[in-house]
Length: 590
Figure 1 (tube, rainbow, N blue to C red):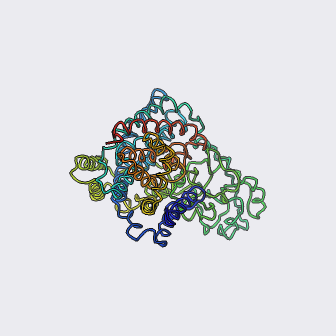
Figure 2: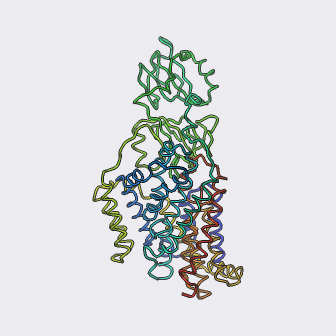
């Protein structure tokens, strides 16, 4: 292997370490690798940018729009309302959850499915008196298993299929080509969750219960009548830049001023509600013009139409990740005030303004009603529960489901290619009014799409530089050329990579190695390619390995070890089923 191969291996290793050990986003890391490989001449411009025109990538984008159309039209809510109901016991609750989630995830990208169901399942858990921690990991796992049933169930399947077509020139796999392997895996895995793993899940208080006593993290003072602060703005009174506390709301003559702006003028008798370190009340009362508040009912406990208390999870796409609440200018950016933060199932103590936000943090917010409406279409936060129950569905759920069924039928019967069926379906979602053009644009996850496209460059470099053949030769030596052992080694390698970097990147990096392996031994590549799909999709052991795991991490109040306890057995089970069945369905010498 020449210097280009070694340089490609070094670049790949650098990418893996950067994704594992730093906060840099995956799209930026992959684009840096693409640029580096282009500058060194290892890839020409066509090879470097091939991923951006790949059919698999465009199909992923179109399916995201279709999934958004189903969600915005109320299609998912309709299915959930009809099928969840009241279970008889905990196993029955899991089965009722399985019934809508598995088929929905088989034909819709499972990430928006879980985003839609997290608040529904959280509220359902309160009604049936089962802790969300007993339901939300199963929700994520059911959706992952459902995504393995068809080619469009997860972006990974489409990406691997697209790269396989690009590297081999073969037509690729049909919509239901992987169902012979994915359906048994989904059914066996679901039974394993309900009968075995569910009893290993923790039974913790819900986030709602942890945030129930609002008096624990708020306190109030009053503005003295005819005092020196009367007529001053919040900023002029020195109440905006306090170190350990900040002003949440003002109660004035029975009305509430929420997310108080700096320009708000104080009036005598105002009751000011602060959040932060409660011991700071002593310093606060030293400010001339502030007195203890003596209201019968704490302001925060009063019902007020102006106030909307919202529990929300910080999404992986939130711009504020890595920034402090104060440094992020949270109030101005989102029109909401943070009252409390929970992480790893526990409330975060200390100065709220200095807390750096992380993906999956659960926030208790006091927000204006517009915040709730805005976040139902934006992706900074996943709403768990709020006091405004608005029906945002367009009332076109039936049309949306018909469009999806048409896409599936056209692709399954071979009338048109999956790419064109998906593009047509996305267009019909917009033209039929199931979702707006703006919502369609917002449904496109640019981070994921750019990561996938740039990953193709790294995969192409692995093949063109000889690095893939080098890794394949070492895997052959390790497995002594035995196809079954090579298949198991392929699954294990992809599964481990998926738990520490993105699943799409793991699959795209491994596929060139798989193709080099099968070419060397003159084996049928299909069982190896399908095994790569399954291993990349079936990520259960960590909350960071798969986006749906991260989405339920905060709302379920989970700890990292909770995923290890149930996820490692799931990974082993999925590996045994896949490696056992794949060569039977697609023989090595096919």
